[in-house]
Image (cartoon, rainbow, N blue to C red; front, side, top):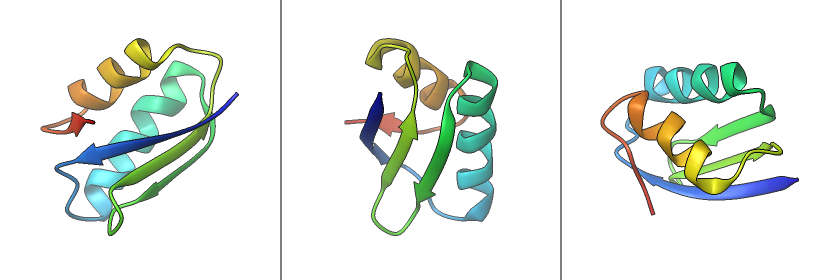
Length: 64
């Protein structure tokens, strides 16, 4: 299922890469991180709690 998640704390391409890698390891596909808008879109069968944990443990990010 396609999901769009708002994330605070992203500042640069490195932030995007960390989040993309974390979500890809979780099994998500088509992960796209828009640092400027603070949005992550992805396709995953995982629940939001699992995705939130993956994002927040990748760095100092906060899922809204």
